Amino acid sequence: MSLSRRLLKHALVATLVSFAVCAQARADELIVSAAASLTNAFKAVGDAYEKAHPGTRLLFNFGASDVLMQQIVKGAPADVFASADQKAMDKAAAEKVIVPATRKDFAANTLVLIVPNDSRFAPTTLNELTAASVKRVAYGDPASVPVGRYTQGALQSAGIWDAVSAKGVLASNVRQSLDYVSRGEVDAGFVFGTDAAIMPEQVKVALTVPTQTPVTYPIAQVEGSKHAADAQSFIAYVLSPAGQAVLAKYGFKPPSAQ
Amino acid sequence: MEHAWVPLLLSLKVAGWATALNLVFGVAAGLGLARWRSGARDVVDSLLTLPLVMPPTVLGYYLLVLLGRRGVVGGWLDRLGIQLVFTWQGAVIASMIVAFPLVLKSARAAFESVDPQLERAARTLGISETAIFFRVTLPLATRGILAGTLLSFARALGEFGATLMIAGNLPGRTQTLSVAVYAAVQAGDDSTANFLVLVTSATCIVVLLLAGRLVPQHSLMTSR
Figure (cartoon, rainbow over the protein chains, first blue to last red):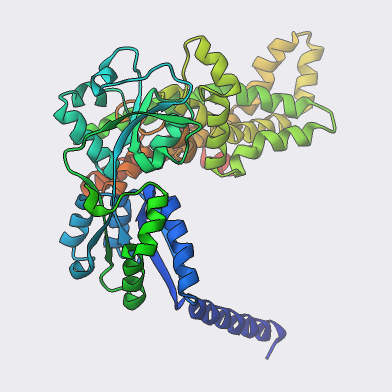
């Protein structure tokens, strides 16, 4: 056997062994696809959960709920899905990618209108957004971001959707709206109350916006998860008093509050 | 599906402007680097080539910090009433910077490959330096510059990361083809995505065919 062939053989064996080791390490990792607004709260819930369940590692995939739902529909190996509105979860249920019996509402939130902290614009009603001095308003793309759908519903019921959407800047998730407002690139933006609370120095809440449908967050186990027991254990932890206490610390309300 | 023509036309407008500006700045910088005799030349060349290798998100972030309303340059522009973030002009700047090295590299190589004997011969005939540049040097370097310009147009047409960060996703105003594809896929709107992807692919093929017509293949390959 020539030297190069022997080297090739060793390299192949080493590669296979390292793949096997990686696969071993991945065996008890739980992938949680969660709405972008849950970023800070779920990281803290995850830390607490990992302390209570040594041996299980949580991997979070944060993003716009509909994007996460699309990923799961197309076969992404998520174990748990947590959405920022019922519609994204309904679509997941219609595509039969979640286990319906495991679906539970675990948190509630509010929709708020925020402005940059140093802004002189301090709207007290939604109608003020139609003023000519307001050039740009950020909100999530209603086609893929729950906060955008709540925004659209609220503006439609106020009869000003057409006027405001003409100056809309579509964000690909709620944290992008927050970022646009915090940098002062837009005059105002729609986010959840818990998002505004992340950046008290950069943004201020002008008003809390009543929504057509209550802002509630459902969670469910993904159909075909290889870690079904762990997934259900994590869902139970989120709903438990310990999990709810962490969520409350980040401003989320219990689901029954709305 | 006529709404797909809006992002296509916007993409062509943005890439066209970016390429026109790059042609001016890239050729000037390429000539400067080809003629400049200094140790700092390689450093400057590397700095100007950075956008080719840096992640577009890093460029987008730099641009946002620099050109945003609270940025150094953006704040000053804001007082003049000019806003670049969330405008198609912002998208032009992003595409321009990302594609700039392609023009610069090929222009520099093209100028360096011009035989200095020919320029010296022209000088002995008593023509002005400006005339030498436009009548001897530039015609000899045209093919290389043209090849780089077409590559730069193609790159600008496909720009996504930096564009999304600085120009955002405003349908009809800053939503270029690549951003429109991204938005459609995010929304799970596969039929729109399919159509946009086909339009994009067809546009790229047309650009490459035109490039083949304008510039003989061997000079596209060697870009000299």
